[in-house]
Structures are given as C-alpha cells and as structure tokens.
Image (tube, rainbow, N blue to C red; front, top):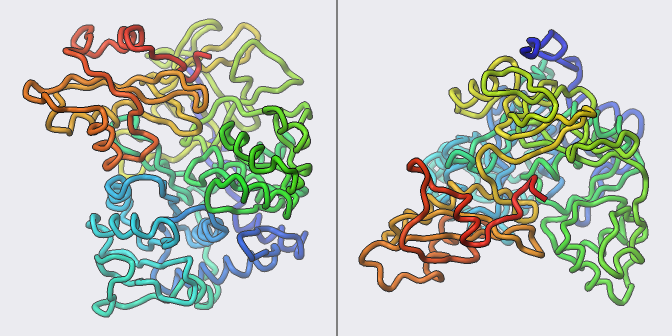
Length: 539
C-alpha cells in the first residue's frame, strides 16, 4: 500500500489565516493584555501590533518585500518576535541565527542566506558579529541595523566592514527604533505558502540547511498546542531557551497564538531566571536539567517566589520551590525543525506502547520502507509526515528539497516503528546523531573539522553517556605519520575555533586505525571499543 497523494486542504490548509490576522485579533479581543516583556519594556497587544506595523513600514521603506530575507544575529529579545511578524506582513522571511556558533559558521549562514537586512546585537556577541561580518562576502549587500542601540545608526549601511565601520560610501539606515517610525506597512496580500521563518538545521549532510517554514506551518503548530491544552491566554512563558531552535520557538509561537504573554531573556542565567519568574509570575519555561540544578542553588535562600512556575518534578528542593505540574496533559513526542515543531504527542489519556505517542491534530504520520510502501506494525522504517506543519523545502537546496518531499510526503530521515496498538516509537536517525542537552551534534560536521587539521590522517566521532548533558562528544583520531606531538588539547582547540563550542570533542583518543566494514567506518565497533552509547531513541 502506498500513502495517498495530498488533497487540496493538505496542500494549502488555513490559507485564509496569517500571523498578522492573529495579532490583530488579539489587539481587538485583549487590547490592554500584555503580549511581550523584555527587560524594562512591557508591550500590550495594541502596542505590539502598532510596533509591528511600523517596523513593516520601515522595512518596506528600505526596499524589503516579498521573497526578501532578514537575518537576526542576536540573543533572545522581543524584537525577534516583532521582526518575524513584520516579515509576515511583507511576504519576507526572518532567520534567527545560532549566535553561539563560531564566526566561520555564522559567515557560512550569512553567505548562504544572502539577507537584505541583518539586525545585530553588540552586547556580549559584538566581537563575534564583527568577525562574522569581516569574513562574509554577502555582508556588503545587506543593511546592518544594531538593535540594542536604538538611538544610533549602529554602523548600518551597505558596507563590508565591522559594526562600527564608516558607512559614508553608501546610504545609511537609522537604528532599529527609528525604523519603526518610517510609516505603516503596505496593505498588500501575502501568500501564506511563502516562507516566513527560516531555521538552519544541524549539518546532517556536512553543511547546515535552512528549513523554509511558511505561515501556515507556524499557525498549525500554534493550533495544535492550544487544541491539546498546552498553551492558553493565561500563560506567561519565559523564553529561556534559544530561539534559533524550533523546540523553544514553538512554545513562543503557541503562547502568541493563544494570546498569552511572552517574557524574553537574552540567555540562561540561573539567578536572572529566578528573578523573572518571581517578578512576572511566569507559568512555563524551557529548562534543561543543569539549569534546574543551578536555579535550585541560586534560590537556596528562598528569596525568589517560583510558585507560579508549573514544572516537571526535579531534584531535591526544586519541587518545594515550584508548582509540580501533574496535569494529565500530552507531552511532546516526535518532531523536527522541518516540521515547525512536533507532530506526535504522548497523551496520558491514550496510553500506548510507543515512546513517541500518537499523531497530533493536523498531522498524518506513517512508517515506510525504501520503496515508499507503508510498513506493518512492528517493522522499522523511515518516518514520513504529511500536513500543514511541513516545510516547503530548504533554502537553495533544490535537490535535497525534492528528495525530502518525494511522493507528496516529508521524508524525515529518521527511523521509527508503528506499534500494534497504533502508537509510534522513534528508533533513531538514519544517520547517526549525538544529543548534548538540547543541542544536536552531527558527527559528519565534527569529523570534517578534525580532518582539516594537518596532523590528522583520519577521525570518527561517537557519543558517550554524560550524566549532566545526556551525551558528550568523543573523537577517535588517527594521527598523521609525522604527527608525533599532536595532543588532545590541540585538537579540541582546533575545533573550538571553527565550530560551535558545544560541538567540539570533550574527549580525544588516539588510535592506529579506525575499524571499517565495507570501506565505511564501523561505528558499532567504535562504540564497543570506546564506550559509546546513550544515543537518541535508545534509552
């Protein structure tokens, strides 16, 4: 049996609704309700709608329109939400970059994306931004707007220099806040199928790929969250996870869709998170176990009231600080960036044998064999998905986009199994992946970096269990014949300079050769020999 081709609703669902429609409805229904909190600012739905309209008008005034791309090169901030909504009104797309990446990695994204506008941040990451800009060929064709210096031009203009470079050789653009005063957004129809959010996935094929997510995908995820009771107008969500990850951004968008309040903080700082929860009475947040431990320590004296926070049970002391969330609500099962979030949920009301639960609203999920035929329960095959949350493709990757969308289905590249009771189990990636806390690390990318060292003849990367982070990256390296003085520290430093720090190996072992099977590295043998394990889907 072959899955049916998509019908009209699946090809163009909820096409009558845009992000702008949702924002305007909240403005009418709850004009004085608080939509966004960031630092010292608190914006009502009326104020947020006015700012987004002004921003869209300002962007249009500098030539931004349908099909253009805007790069956000900064940490979490309410202005990222504004940019996304303004882009949606213009038919443009907003891309939040992973600010933790190295300048070399960020320059790749900048050159691949070729944005018309880059909104950048100086605080904490200004030096990294300057190096990125200096190393990019596309930097010279973009307007650069420093968002955390609202009254200054921030080095904006079409130049190839760093943030403080003189832009006298080209026309200048005012600072971010000045841009909002340029006029209202043009009243033009927007295609909901056009990408509005671009998120670069980890380098599963050796290079990052920008997933193109249209408005209907974000709205479908928002609908699913509210339909399942995971977001409501009463929620105050603390954006403590990085918004360049769909896993955290989907909660932001679900809160927006439901009419709740989004509270933004630049990055994870345990004491600041405690303060924000206490002051703004946050009801939810994206918190990893190490962050929970740090918050318990920061609030050991009980000076912050965290009782508004509904959270999963945690370490000693945590349960007494927060409200343990024992509501029988579904939790996330399986998802990925290309799906704008999750498509299956583990629902206590419908227990099943499968670890990934069952498909949620608007999603159809199947397990197929190499020929595309749906497999019977118990058989392992590729997870394929159809529905409004699926991306339209990858930016400038036509062949990869075609391969992923063959047969009218999104081919995830992940392995799964349908259980006898109809539930789903996630088995693991078709290509190996290492999971370090919330970060995906693809060995191919780290191995390419290791092999670029002149003293490395060959290298392979495995994941080893880590009690704090789930897995750590371990490199198995074959030194070159004349590399007598090669050290683990040197290789770790080499990787730290070229890829994001969380991707670098924490452990390096030297061997004379790598085990191979049929010419390919035998990763199973490497795991046995060097303590690999803890991969996603194996727990």
